[in-house]
Length: 271
View (cartoon, rainbow, N blue to C red):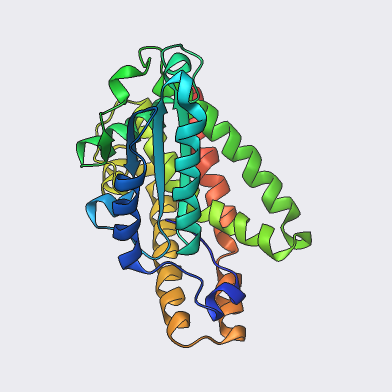
């Protein structure tokens, strides 16, 4: 799952190159350590070599309270480098004093994602996760919050889609393609079903435990893979009209994604 690109970005090839993910991870390992950093975790499919040209990365950094600005400046430099390579890098910075309370911003799902990344070689410096208060984190509460938010978001995007400017329509299509795997991951966590944090594994385990809702998930994952193939085709030889047809072909995913979220929301509400 990942970005949906504007025609102009595809025409100008403002899309990540696969080899730059490894370069960005290397630069992050070199530049993030320093004054004020307790530890960091970089996460995403790229840390196990399974990235696509639509992948993004997560960067979490735990700082001392005294040196928040020092760590933030280094994180900012890394994010800037990512933008030069057209790679989406989502930074998350937390200081130790807030991290040891129950009011930090990490939810159960993101904490579990960082744990998976740490187990797979994503730690930079010291593993910061044991330093963060996590006993209060509730996978079910996190799932309910996420699905409620996504249900509202998708309903707004669907009802507003025709009048949106291009960048908002692309964001809506991206949400429709990204949300299902995130939803499936949250639901598996809420019900305590273990899984490896990769798209293929999440899809397989979800299908096994919730077959009644798996058809929509499978259809959306298939559509997402189809778009990746079309994107690669148009990066080789861009044609505006056919690429706009590709984007229009994604629009039914908004409806499918909305009802997939709704199905899972009702399942959580009743079980």
